[in-house]
Length: 469
Image 1 (cartoon, rainbow, N blue to C red):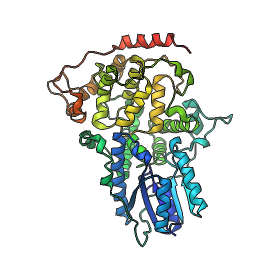
Image 2: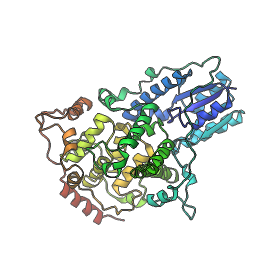
Image 3: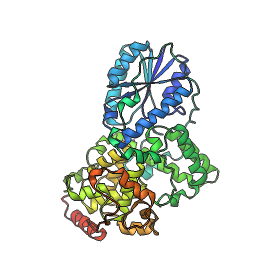
Image 4: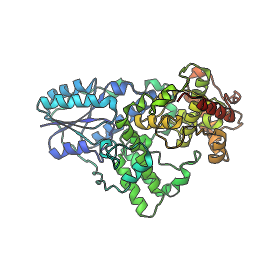
Protein backbone atom coordinates (compact mmCIF):
# COMPACT_ATOMS: atom_id res chain seq x y z
CA UNK A 1 0.00 0.00 0.00
CA UNK A 2 3.02 2.28 -0.40
CA UNK A 3 2.46 5.82 -1.69
CA UNK A 4 5.11 7.45 -3.85
CA UNK A 5 5.37 11.25 -3.54
CA UNK A 6 7.11 12.88 -6.45
CA UNK A 7 8.97 15.88 -5.04
CA UNK A 8 9.33 18.86 -7.37
CA UNK A 9 9.51 22.59 -6.55
CA UNK A 10 8.15 21.87 -3.08
CA UNK A 11 11.19 21.26 -0.88
CA UNK A 12 9.49 21.57 2.51
CA UNK A 13 7.55 19.61 5.12
CA UNK A 14 5.10 22.43 5.92
CA UNK A 15 1.99 23.09 3.83
CA UNK A 16 2.77 20.30 1.39
CA UNK A 17 -0.59 19.05 0.10
CA UNK A 18 0.68 15.99 -1.78
CA UNK A 19 2.88 14.81 1.08
CA UNK A 20 0.16 15.47 3.64
CA UNK A 21 -2.32 13.41 1.62
CA UNK A 22 0.17 10.54 1.56
CA UNK A 23 0.64 10.78 5.32
CA UNK A 24 -3.11 10.76 5.87
CA UNK A 25 -3.35 7.40 4.10
CA UNK A 26 -1.28 5.87 6.90
CA UNK A 27 0.71 3.66 4.53
CA UNK A 28 4.48 3.74 3.87
CA UNK A 29 5.66 6.81 1.95
CA UNK A 30 8.52 6.91 -0.52
CA UNK A 31 9.63 10.38 -1.64
CA UNK A 32 11.45 10.63 -4.95
CA UNK A 33 13.12 13.50 -6.74
CA UNK A 34 13.67 13.04 -10.47
CA UNK A 35 16.43 14.72 -12.43
CA UNK A 36 14.49 14.91 -15.66
CA UNK A 37 14.95 16.85 -18.88
CA UNK A 38 13.54 19.98 -17.28
CA UNK A 39 16.13 19.92 -14.51
CA UNK A 40 18.91 19.28 -17.02
CA UNK A 41 17.72 22.26 -19.08
CA UNK A 42 18.09 24.71 -16.18
CA UNK A 43 20.72 27.44 -16.33
CA UNK A 44 23.89 27.27 -14.29
CA UNK A 45 22.77 29.23 -11.22
CA UNK A 46 19.27 27.81 -10.73
CA UNK A 47 20.49 24.25 -11.29
CA UNK A 48 23.25 24.75 -8.71
CA UNK A 49 20.83 26.29 -6.22
CA UNK A 50 18.31 23.49 -6.80
CA UNK A 51 21.02 21.03 -5.82
CA UNK A 52 21.55 22.83 -2.53
CA UNK A 53 17.82 22.76 -1.87
CA UNK A 54 17.56 19.06 -2.64
CA UNK A 55 20.43 18.31 -0.29
CA UNK A 56 18.81 20.27 2.54
CA UNK A 57 15.40 18.69 1.96
CA UNK A 58 16.94 15.22 1.95
CA UNK A 59 18.42 15.99 5.35
CA UNK A 60 15.04 17.17 6.66
CA UNK A 61 13.54 13.83 5.62
CA UNK A 62 16.41 11.98 7.28
CA UNK A 63 15.75 13.95 10.47
CA UNK A 64 12.23 12.46 10.67
CA UNK A 65 13.33 8.92 9.86
CA UNK A 66 12.69 8.97 6.12
CA UNK A 67 14.84 9.31 3.02
CA UNK A 68 14.79 10.94 -0.40
CA UNK A 69 15.21 8.64 -3.38
CA UNK A 70 16.98 10.16 -6.35
CA UNK A 71 16.44 8.97 -9.91
CA UNK A 72 17.29 10.28 -13.37
CA UNK A 73 15.19 10.17 -16.52
CA UNK A 74 11.77 11.07 -17.81
CA UNK A 75 9.16 10.84 -15.05
CA UNK A 76 6.91 8.92 -17.40
CA UNK A 77 9.52 6.15 -17.35
CA UNK A 78 10.99 6.54 -13.88
CA UNK A 79 7.80 6.53 -11.82
CA UNK A 80 6.20 3.38 -13.33
CA UNK A 81 9.49 1.55 -12.70
CA UNK A 82 9.53 2.78 -9.11
CA UNK A 83 5.91 1.67 -8.71
CA UNK A 84 6.92 -1.83 -9.82
CA UNK A 85 9.90 -1.89 -7.44
CA UNK A 86 7.95 -0.77 -4.39
CA UNK A 87 4.54 -2.25 -5.08
CA UNK A 88 3.10 1.24 -4.66
CA UNK A 89 -0.64 1.68 -5.11
CA UNK A 90 -0.63 5.47 -5.21
CA UNK A 91 1.50 8.26 -6.69
CA UNK A 92 1.01 11.88 -5.61
CA UNK A 93 2.68 15.08 -6.76
CA UNK A 94 2.31 18.86 -6.85
CA UNK A 95 1.04 20.36 -10.08
CA UNK A 96 3.30 22.38 -12.34
CA UNK A 97 1.97 25.44 -14.17
CA UNK A 98 4.71 25.50 -16.78
CA UNK A 99 3.14 24.62 -20.15
CA UNK A 100 6.31 22.80 -21.20
CA UNK A 101 5.75 20.36 -18.34
CA UNK A 102 1.99 19.92 -18.17
CA UNK A 103 1.53 17.56 -21.13
CA UNK A 104 4.00 15.11 -19.66
CA UNK A 105 2.22 15.24 -16.30
CA UNK A 106 -1.11 14.47 -17.96
CA UNK A 107 0.38 11.52 -19.84
CA UNK A 108 1.89 10.13 -16.63
CA UNK A 109 -1.38 10.41 -14.74
CA UNK A 110 -3.30 8.70 -17.54
CA UNK A 111 -0.81 5.83 -17.75
CA UNK A 112 -0.79 5.27 -14.00
CA UNK A 113 -4.55 5.27 -13.74
CA UNK A 114 -4.82 2.80 -16.60
CA UNK A 115 -2.68 0.46 -14.48
CA UNK A 116 -4.99 0.87 -11.50
CA UNK A 117 -2.73 3.26 -9.60
CA UNK A 118 -4.24 6.06 -7.52
CA UNK A 119 -2.55 8.94 -9.35
CA UNK A 120 -3.32 12.40 -7.99
CA UNK A 121 -1.86 15.85 -8.46
CA UNK A 122 -2.32 18.61 -5.91
CA UNK A 123 -2.19 22.38 -5.92
CA UNK A 124 1.36 23.52 -6.49
CA UNK A 125 3.38 26.66 -5.83
CA UNK A 126 0.60 29.24 -6.28
CA UNK A 127 -2.12 30.82 -4.15
CA UNK A 128 -4.74 30.69 -6.88
CA UNK A 129 -4.61 28.12 -9.61
CA UNK A 130 -4.72 30.11 -12.86
CA UNK A 131 -8.04 28.74 -14.10
CA UNK A 132 -9.83 29.61 -10.85
CA UNK A 133 -9.50 33.39 -11.18
CA UNK A 134 -11.72 35.07 -13.77
CA UNK A 135 -12.91 38.52 -14.72
CA UNK A 136 -16.59 39.39 -14.32
CA UNK A 137 -17.12 38.43 -17.95
CA UNK A 138 -15.48 35.05 -17.52
CA UNK A 139 -12.12 35.79 -19.14
CA UNK A 140 -8.62 35.99 -17.75
CA UNK A 141 -6.96 39.09 -16.37
CA UNK A 142 -4.62 40.99 -18.69
CA UNK A 143 -3.99 43.84 -16.25
CA UNK A 144 -2.69 43.32 -12.72
CA UNK A 145 -4.64 45.85 -10.64
CA UNK A 146 -8.12 44.44 -11.40
CA UNK A 147 -6.84 40.95 -10.55
CA UNK A 148 -5.41 42.20 -7.25
CA UNK A 149 -8.72 43.82 -6.35
CA UNK A 150 -10.61 40.63 -7.16
CA UNK A 151 -8.48 38.33 -4.97
CA UNK A 152 -7.47 40.71 -2.19
CA UNK A 153 -10.22 39.62 0.20
CA UNK A 154 -10.03 35.91 -0.59
CA UNK A 155 -10.57 33.56 2.34
CA UNK A 156 -7.87 31.00 1.70
CA UNK A 157 -7.49 27.84 3.81
CA UNK A 158 -4.85 27.78 6.49
CA UNK A 159 -1.48 26.27 5.67
CA UNK A 160 -1.13 22.74 6.96
CA UNK A 161 1.37 22.08 9.72
CA UNK A 162 4.80 20.53 9.62
CA UNK A 163 5.01 16.82 8.93
CA UNK A 164 7.04 15.27 11.73
CA UNK A 165 7.01 11.60 10.72
CA UNK A 166 6.61 9.51 7.59
CA UNK A 167 5.78 5.80 7.65
CA UNK A 168 8.76 3.95 6.18
CA UNK A 169 8.65 0.95 3.84
CA UNK A 170 10.26 -2.34 4.83
CA UNK A 171 12.95 -1.79 2.22
CA UNK A 172 14.07 1.44 0.56
CA UNK A 173 14.53 1.35 -3.22
CA UNK A 174 17.94 2.13 -4.66
CA UNK A 175 18.88 5.78 -5.00
CA UNK A 176 21.36 7.67 -7.13
CA UNK A 177 23.85 9.98 -5.42
CA UNK A 178 23.30 13.73 -5.55
CA UNK A 179 27.00 14.45 -5.94
CA UNK A 180 27.08 12.32 -9.09
CA UNK A 181 24.54 14.65 -10.70
CA UNK A 182 27.06 17.53 -10.55
CA UNK A 183 24.26 20.09 -10.63
CA UNK A 184 26.70 22.87 -9.79
CA UNK A 185 29.31 22.09 -12.44
CA UNK A 186 28.42 24.97 -14.75
CA UNK A 187 28.83 27.52 -11.95
CA UNK A 188 32.58 26.86 -11.88
CA UNK A 189 34.36 29.27 -9.52
CA UNK A 190 31.31 31.50 -9.21
CA UNK A 191 29.62 28.95 -6.97
CA UNK A 192 32.04 29.59 -4.11
CA UNK A 193 31.21 33.30 -4.23
CA UNK A 194 27.44 33.00 -4.50
CA UNK A 195 27.39 30.32 -1.78
CA UNK A 196 28.12 33.01 0.80
CA UNK A 197 24.80 34.70 0.02
CA UNK A 198 22.29 31.86 -0.31
CA UNK A 199 19.56 31.09 2.21
CA UNK A 200 18.76 27.41 1.83
CA UNK A 201 15.96 25.33 3.28
CA UNK A 202 12.52 25.61 4.82
CA UNK A 203 13.70 26.61 8.29
CA UNK A 204 15.87 29.40 6.89
CA UNK A 205 13.00 30.56 4.70
CA UNK A 206 10.64 30.74 7.66
CA UNK A 207 13.22 32.72 9.64
CA UNK A 208 13.59 35.07 6.69
CA UNK A 209 9.81 35.64 6.56
CA UNK A 210 9.59 36.20 10.32
CA UNK A 211 12.47 38.67 10.27
CA UNK A 212 10.94 40.60 7.39
CA UNK A 213 7.51 40.95 8.99
CA UNK A 214 8.97 41.90 12.36
CA UNK A 215 11.69 44.30 11.24
CA UNK A 216 11.14 45.44 7.67
CA UNK A 217 7.49 45.21 6.64
CA UNK A 218 6.50 48.49 8.29
CA UNK A 219 8.73 50.49 5.94
CA UNK A 220 8.53 48.08 3.01
CA UNK A 221 6.36 50.30 0.74
CA UNK A 222 9.21 52.83 0.55
CA UNK A 223 12.27 50.73 1.25
CA UNK A 224 11.55 48.15 -1.45
CA UNK A 225 12.59 50.71 -4.08
CA UNK A 226 15.96 51.44 -2.48
CA UNK A 227 18.57 49.01 -3.84
CA UNK A 228 21.15 50.00 -1.24
CA UNK A 229 18.88 49.09 1.66
CA UNK A 230 18.05 45.63 2.98
CA UNK A 231 14.35 46.41 2.89
CA UNK A 232 12.77 43.47 1.07
CA UNK A 233 11.87 39.94 2.14
CA UNK A 234 14.31 38.24 -0.29
CA UNK A 235 11.89 35.31 -0.32
CA UNK A 236 11.90 34.95 -4.11
CA UNK A 237 14.81 32.54 -3.72
CA UNK A 238 12.88 30.28 -1.36
CA UNK A 239 9.54 30.55 -3.17
CA UNK A 240 11.30 29.42 -6.35
CA UNK A 241 12.16 26.03 -4.87
CA UNK A 242 9.12 25.69 -2.66
CA UNK A 243 11.11 25.97 0.55
CA UNK A 244 8.23 28.11 1.72
CA UNK A 245 4.74 28.22 0.26
CA UNK A 246 2.97 31.37 -0.95
CA UNK A 247 0.12 30.40 1.38
CA UNK A 248 2.42 30.61 4.40
CA UNK A 249 3.49 34.08 3.24
CA UNK A 250 -0.09 35.17 2.50
CA UNK A 251 -1.43 34.33 5.94
CA UNK A 252 1.63 35.67 7.76
CA UNK A 253 1.40 38.89 5.77
CA UNK A 254 -2.27 39.45 6.52
CA UNK A 255 -1.74 38.65 10.21
CA UNK A 256 0.92 41.33 10.37
CA UNK A 257 -1.34 43.77 8.54
CA UNK A 258 -4.20 43.18 10.97
CA UNK A 259 -1.75 43.65 13.83
CA UNK A 260 -1.08 47.14 12.57
CA UNK A 261 1.81 46.66 10.13
CA UNK A 262 0.32 48.51 7.16
CA UNK A 263 3.27 47.78 4.89
CA UNK A 264 2.51 44.06 5.04
CA UNK A 265 -0.37 44.56 2.60
CA UNK A 266 2.09 45.74 -0.06
CA UNK A 267 4.08 42.57 0.56
CA UNK A 268 0.96 40.47 0.00
CA UNK A 269 0.24 42.47 -3.15
CA UNK A 270 3.68 41.52 -4.44
CA UNK A 271 2.81 37.87 -3.82
CA UNK A 272 -0.20 38.36 -6.07
CA UNK A 273 2.04 39.99 -8.69
CA UNK A 274 3.84 36.64 -8.78
CA UNK A 275 0.42 34.97 -9.13
CA UNK A 276 -0.36 37.27 -12.06
CA UNK A 277 2.73 35.94 -13.82
CA UNK A 278 1.49 32.36 -13.49
CA UNK A 279 -2.01 33.48 -14.51
CA UNK A 280 -0.58 34.83 -17.76
CA UNK A 281 1.71 31.84 -18.26
CA UNK A 282 -1.32 29.54 -18.14
CA UNK A 283 -3.62 31.58 -20.36
CA UNK A 284 -0.98 32.93 -22.76
CA UNK A 285 1.87 30.38 -22.70
CA UNK A 286 3.61 32.10 -25.60
CA UNK A 287 4.77 34.74 -23.11
CA UNK A 288 7.95 32.71 -22.49
CA UNK A 289 8.91 32.36 -26.14
CA UNK A 290 7.44 35.24 -28.16
CA UNK A 291 6.05 38.73 -27.81
CA UNK A 292 2.96 38.84 -25.62
CA UNK A 293 1.67 41.63 -27.85
CA UNK A 294 2.01 40.20 -31.38
CA UNK A 295 2.47 43.63 -32.99
CA UNK A 296 5.96 43.70 -31.50
CA UNK A 297 6.99 40.89 -33.83
CA UNK A 298 7.61 43.66 -36.37
CA UNK A 299 9.90 45.70 -34.13
CA UNK A 300 13.55 45.66 -35.32
CA UNK A 301 15.30 44.55 -32.15
CA UNK A 302 18.85 43.30 -32.40
CA UNK A 303 18.97 39.54 -31.79
CA UNK A 304 22.72 39.01 -32.31
CA UNK A 305 24.22 38.12 -28.93
CA UNK A 306 27.75 38.30 -30.31
CA UNK A 307 27.75 42.09 -30.51
CA UNK A 308 30.13 43.91 -28.18
CA UNK A 309 27.35 46.01 -26.66
CA UNK A 310 25.52 42.84 -25.62
CA UNK A 311 28.63 41.44 -23.97
CA UNK A 312 29.37 44.74 -22.27
CA UNK A 313 25.86 44.57 -20.81
CA UNK A 314 26.34 40.97 -19.70
CA UNK A 315 29.70 41.72 -18.10
CA UNK A 316 28.44 44.77 -16.24
CA UNK A 317 30.79 47.19 -18.03
CA UNK A 318 28.34 49.43 -19.88
CA UNK A 319 29.64 52.57 -18.20
CA UNK A 320 26.17 53.15 -16.76
CA UNK A 321 26.67 52.70 -13.03
CA UNK A 322 23.16 51.61 -12.08
CA UNK A 323 23.19 48.95 -14.80
CA UNK A 324 26.67 47.71 -13.97
CA UNK A 325 26.10 47.65 -10.21
CA UNK A 326 22.95 45.57 -10.65
CA UNK A 327 24.60 43.07 -12.98
CA UNK A 328 27.53 42.68 -10.60
CA UNK A 329 25.18 42.17 -7.67
CA UNK A 330 23.71 39.25 -9.61
CA UNK A 331 27.09 37.60 -10.19
CA UNK A 332 28.08 37.88 -6.53
CA UNK A 333 24.78 37.07 -4.81
CA UNK A 334 22.80 35.20 -7.45
CA UNK A 335 19.97 37.71 -7.13
CA UNK A 336 19.30 41.29 -8.11
CA UNK A 337 17.23 44.03 -6.50
CA UNK A 338 13.94 44.50 -8.31
CA UNK A 339 14.65 48.16 -9.13
CA UNK A 340 17.92 46.99 -10.67
CA UNK A 341 16.10 44.37 -12.74
CA UNK A 342 13.88 47.04 -14.25
CA UNK A 343 16.84 49.29 -15.03
CA UNK A 344 19.06 46.66 -16.65
CA UNK A 345 16.12 45.32 -18.68
CA UNK A 346 15.08 48.76 -19.86
CA UNK A 347 18.67 49.63 -20.81
CA UNK A 348 19.14 46.45 -22.83
CA UNK A 349 15.83 46.59 -24.68
CA UNK A 350 15.47 50.34 -25.12
CA UNK A 351 18.85 52.08 -24.94
CA UNK A 352 20.60 49.22 -26.75
CA UNK A 353 17.52 48.08 -28.74
CA UNK A 354 18.30 44.41 -28.07
CA UNK A 355 15.63 41.74 -27.95
CA UNK A 356 14.24 40.92 -24.52
CA UNK A 357 14.95 37.22 -25.16
CA UNK A 358 18.68 37.95 -24.79
CA UNK A 359 18.09 39.24 -21.29
CA UNK A 360 15.52 36.60 -20.42
CA UNK A 361 17.95 33.81 -21.30
CA UNK A 362 20.84 35.47 -19.47
CA UNK A 363 18.81 35.84 -16.30
CA UNK A 364 17.74 32.21 -16.64
CA UNK A 365 21.41 31.26 -16.47
CA UNK A 366 22.50 33.63 -13.72
CA UNK A 367 19.69 34.00 -11.16
CA UNK A 368 19.29 31.59 -8.27
CA UNK A 369 15.69 32.81 -7.90
CA UNK A 370 14.88 32.27 -11.57
CA UNK A 371 11.21 31.59 -12.11
CA UNK A 372 9.86 30.90 -15.63
CA UNK A 373 6.68 32.94 -15.19
CA UNK A 374 8.09 35.92 -13.33
CA UNK A 375 11.17 36.12 -15.54
CA UNK A 376 9.14 36.14 -18.75
CA UNK A 377 6.58 38.65 -17.50
CA UNK A 378 9.27 40.92 -16.09
CA UNK A 379 11.25 41.07 -19.29
CA UNK A 380 8.22 41.65 -21.48
CA UNK A 381 6.90 44.28 -19.06
CA UNK A 382 10.21 46.14 -19.22
CA UNK A 383 10.58 45.91 -22.99
CA UNK A 384 7.08 47.21 -23.75
CA UNK A 385 5.91 44.05 -25.49
CA UNK A 386 4.17 42.62 -22.45
CA UNK A 387 1.30 43.14 -20.01
CA UNK A 388 1.89 46.70 -18.88
CA UNK A 389 -0.81 49.33 -18.66
CA UNK A 390 1.81 52.08 -19.03
CA UNK A 391 2.65 53.07 -22.64
CA UNK A 392 5.50 51.19 -24.23
CA UNK A 393 7.45 54.39 -24.87
CA UNK A 394 8.30 54.76 -21.18
CA UNK A 395 12.10 54.64 -21.04
CA UNK A 396 13.80 54.55 -17.65
CA UNK A 397 16.71 56.95 -17.41
CA UNK A 398 19.34 55.00 -15.45
CA UNK A 399 21.07 58.19 -14.30
CA UNK A 400 18.02 59.98 -12.91
CA UNK A 401 16.83 56.66 -11.46
CA UNK A 402 20.13 56.45 -9.60
CA UNK A 403 19.71 60.00 -8.32
CA UNK A 404 16.24 59.09 -7.08
CA UNK A 405 16.85 55.68 -5.53
CA UNK A 406 20.59 55.73 -4.70
CA UNK A 407 21.14 59.38 -3.94
CA UNK A 408 24.33 58.86 -1.93
CA UNK A 409 25.60 56.14 -4.29
CA UNK A 410 25.73 53.53 -1.54
CA UNK A 411 24.52 50.82 -3.95
CA UNK A 412 27.00 51.78 -6.64
CA UNK A 413 29.87 51.92 -4.14
CA UNK A 414 28.97 48.45 -2.87
CA UNK A 415 29.23 46.82 -6.28
CA UNK A 416 31.69 48.83 -8.40
CA UNK A 417 35.39 48.66 -7.47
CA UNK A 418 37.13 50.50 -10.30
CA UNK A 419 38.54 53.86 -9.30
CA UNK A 420 38.20 53.20 -5.57
CA UNK A 421 41.22 53.21 -3.27
CA UNK A 422 39.42 50.99 -0.79
CA UNK A 423 36.62 49.18 -2.63
CA UNK A 424 33.93 47.25 -0.79
CA UNK A 425 34.47 43.51 -0.36
CA UNK A 426 31.31 42.82 -2.40
CA UNK A 427 32.71 44.86 -5.28
CA UNK A 428 35.93 42.84 -5.23
CA UNK A 429 33.97 39.59 -5.09
CA UNK A 430 32.67 40.35 -8.57
CA UNK A 431 36.13 39.70 -10.01
CA UNK A 432 36.27 36.36 -8.20
CA UNK A 433 32.85 35.29 -9.50
CA UNK A 434 33.07 36.09 -13.20
CA UNK A 435 34.75 33.88 -15.82
CA UNK A 436 38.49 34.47 -16.17
CA UNK A 437 37.95 34.67 -19.93
CA UNK A 438 36.34 38.09 -19.43
CA UNK A 439 39.80 39.46 -18.58
CA UNK A 440 38.50 42.04 -16.13
CA UNK A 441 40.46 43.29 -13.13
CA UNK A 442 39.98 45.86 -10.41
CA UNK A 443 42.89 47.90 -11.70
CA UNK A 444 41.22 48.72 -14.99
CA UNK A 445 39.57 52.09 -15.52
CA UNK A 446 35.82 52.27 -15.30
CA UNK A 447 34.49 52.51 -18.89
CA UNK A 448 32.72 55.39 -20.54
CA UNK A 449 29.04 54.72 -21.35
CA UNK A 450 28.56 52.57 -24.42
CA UNK A 451 25.27 54.43 -24.90
CA UNK A 452 24.66 57.48 -22.70
CA UNK A 453 21.37 57.76 -20.86
CA UNK A 454 19.99 60.72 -22.82
CA UNK A 455 21.29 59.41 -26.14
CA UNK A 456 19.70 56.01 -25.53
CA UNK A 457 16.35 57.54 -24.79
CA UNK A 458 16.45 59.44 -28.09
CA UNK A 459 17.43 56.25 -29.94
CA UNK A 460 14.54 54.33 -28.39
CA UNK A 461 11.95 57.02 -29.01
CA UNK A 462 13.11 57.41 -32.61
CA UNK A 463 12.77 53.66 -33.16
CA UNK A 464 9.28 53.74 -31.66
CA UNK A 465 8.21 56.65 -33.86
CA UNK A 466 9.36 54.79 -36.95
CA UNK A 467 7.82 51.49 -35.95
CA UNK A 468 5.69 49.69 -38.50
CA UNK A 469 2.79 48.93 -36.15
